[in-house]
Amino acid sequence: MVRAKGASARVELVFDDEEKAKAIHSSLKLEELPETARCKVEVARRKNVLFIEIDARDTAALRAALNSFLRWTMVARDAIEAVGK
Image (cartoon, rainbow, N blue to C red; front, side, top):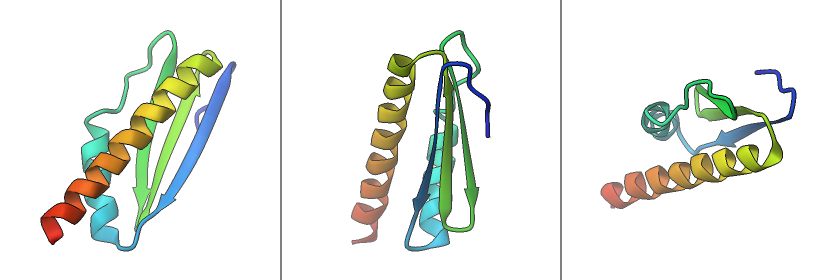
């Protein structure tokens, strides 16, 4: 896990199957932020579990990054489910 001086979060999201987690992981990796003055985000996957780690300078940056990545995760999940129908 990345170490924070300000604020950090680690989110673990468990999906029904590994393929869905793999597809969502691929889409989120495109959004992974480089280390900046305010935050760093890392996205990883192990089988059907997706890990999002955020290391931020302050809680506002943490909240903004967390909201964005969770929203992108939901959009990717909904798109995968819509295509599957």
